Image (cartoon, rainbow, N blue to C red; front, side, top):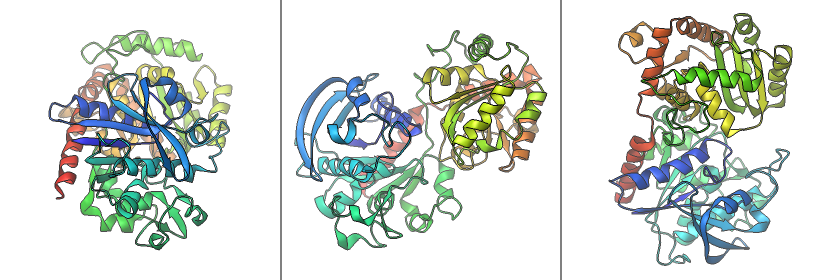
Length: 486
């Protein structure tokens, strides 16, 4: 089975969010499955960071797509033997900024072309005109809007026999562009319609994938149902309802090598479910690093997140003064909404011994927040899967979450029943509001004071099977189902 995994980012080459973690871990997990008798290659743009980190790189072909001359480079992931094909085009991808925007956070004006080229190259590799004649995929897995035009190109231009799956990591990001891009993207004008890639007068990359891909997947079973509703469907719920029989929800896993408190080299001391003592040392080191008052008896709450409306973190500043008054500390890492950044910064300046705010992203610090905090706050309004709550479970840092998407699928609320049957792993809000978040955190604080009970909850989470093994097996079944045509 030959699989092309098309994505716009993959950790550890390049990362802006959870898509990168999935794109780096899932292909590696598939290659590690005894049941997977195949060959999987990751396709992504040749950003500067990607070109610097790839190993064993060699050019394998030159292609012309959408008026752009690109070199295909074959290499290996830095942390595994997973094959990577990088599309090198200096003008499109080697820029001073991120994958989607410049260093000031302003989206690149030619993103339609940049990711049109990625999608078109993916389609070309799946066609009889592929420059890699010795390797043509049986199946392509596209990820989010950045690669979602590939199934349309495959069906409308290349007439490819390769089967396609579009994986939805967040339906809120759709890749909608002005119709003036139609010619540059070389899309057939007759398919600019409702039964095609037209969406409210725009070209929609994501809708194209939803319409033309053979199968659809998303990153949790609950999210697969939620996106068929008006509340979570972002205008695409009708098409998703039509295609519901082709839609599968598979909960993400985590890279157990990268995210393990027993092996994590970022931590001052490692620990495990059977010996949690090292966690206290990590907490002390984190308090010292962030300038918080060093106090083992102060509950330390962590946040690692994009600061957006989706993540629900605007609910937190309103209740933090009450929690600070109760002795709580906060370690916050993230960036996004400037007003929200300012709110957290203001609290950090007023109470520096209890609140730390780090703007931006820091992989080392994120690991230490996950390990050193007592609980992890993640009140997302919607969450396709979420990975941070899984990291919290793995690190014995019970998550405080809203019952949506992958959060509902992965965190079991702590109550009398779940404590008695040892299934409690975290704390689930009853509604999305500051009041509900406060009640849930205070409930968690009450349990936290009972150390024996708290350790049971920690161990319940740490003993969950949340690695990529079972998820990879589910994807393999989906691949087989897609290839069989059932």
